[in-house]
Amino acid sequence: MKRQLKRLSMLFVVTAMMVTVFAACSKADNGGTSAGNASKEQTNNGGGSAPEPVELKFMLFGDKPADMDKVLAEFEKRTKDTLNTKINIEFNPNADHKQKVKLKLAAGEEVDAVFDAAWMNLTQNISQGYYQELDKYFNNDAYPGLKKAFTPEFLEANKINGHIYVIPFTNFFYDMPVIYIRKDLREKFGMQPIQSNDDLQKYLEKVQQEEPTMIPFGQKGDRGFFKLFEPEGKITNVRTDPNFISGTGVSFNVALSGDGKKVLGATTLGDPEADFAKFPAPFNSSDYFYNRYDKYVEWNKYVQKDVLNEKDAEALFVSGKSAAMEGTINGSSTKRQKLQKSVPGADLEYYMYKSNYRSLQPGAIPTDFKAWNDIAIPVTSKNIERTMKFFDWMFSSQDNHDLIELGIEGEHWTKDGDKGYKGTANTPNYIFPGYEMTWNPIMSRISSDNDAEAIKILEYQGKMDSYYKIPAAGFTFNPEPVKTEIAMVQPKWQESVQLFNVGLDKNWKADAVKLNEELRSLGLEKIRAELIKQLQAYLDNGGK
Image 1 (cartoon, helix red, strand yellow):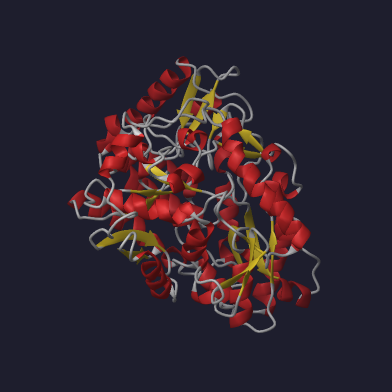
Image 2 (tube, helix red, strand yellow):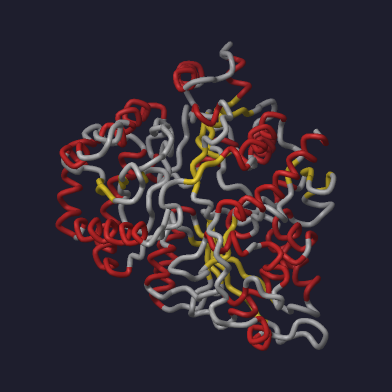
């Protein structure tokens, strides 16, 4: 295991370097602010008296760790004479966070840092002027922690409209999607390890038959089956789920010419079949993009009845109430610990349901080399410098980062080599959502509690040659010209697609057409035209 961890720790270094190879090569834009000028704006937190005390208000989502207050108290103790900062984190329910952030920003309420992402409302919120430009805080000697943790190339890949609006968080460029199942139940049923979707269905059938009080396949209401049954072909000249162009309010399938220089069109759910027929094969049929909804309807019998109201599928699984859940490979060791604490004798394993990933083929994972998770600083914050100084502190040393991401050393975790860590009996009391605020390929440690198979998968998704760059990777849609139409279209889209994603609408094809007609009356065509216009301009300017 130590050999595996040493090898995997090197992959974090490789991942940190990958953005240099694949991201845009231009230098990071410092927003016209020099290091010297930025330095003058900073609150004094070293070499003199401590600054005035301040309380920073953060908004994240998920469950608040039981020992969150204890860890923050330790942070305050360590930094009283330097930062003199108190952190107040509001943890919103997963399903409510996006809307709560939107309402607070629209109302002009003072918040110092919020989690947002391209798959939430990031681009819309930027276009509406809700977030502060952060260019001057990066690649700046006045913020050595941020300079060390975020390379100019990585920041360049995560710019929007030419500026840095977020602190981007990732430890790999992809987190492998898996289905977690109960290993002990599979063995009880006399089944071999799951190697296909057919095997998975047989397992779910066995659960229904032999464990009638359990939910065979517990799901989160706004996630559903996620990427299960999606097309698996290599993305060459099309942008579609799950790599669609975000920020448009709906998910479009955008096709490009063979040389990647011309936009052939943009289709979406419920469009006439003739529109799809204009695309090159195999994208010339709506079935290519959407026949997975038929499978979702078929498999809905394994899902809990009140799935639309479910906000925490993991809680169902680790408590023993469900026999399977969809998730990602990161955190597998933590899920195992929680399960075994709740259900003595239980164990889990996982099935990589994307076949081209399951065989760990080189060049199989599509990516735009952007982070999928971010922290943004609202313009309503009166403590922008103090907030950025906190993040600079967190990334300035391994000990600082360890405290926030893992908790108190010796209580919540222990070191295992240079980059590894082991859990303790108190680890479940501090499971911090690192993907929301701390993940970094340079700073994040690797759990020694991962099994050999998880190490193998993590190795794979940490290798440079596992990835390929998707078309128009550097393009970011600017929703400002159609923000009114997006505001009308997006809620209707999300409401219907949520039903489709959990398999609750047996008549989804007919209802998709009705949805499409309604969206057209609300401005869908204007959004579509704007997307094609902006993307074509990007390609005409040499974008790839």
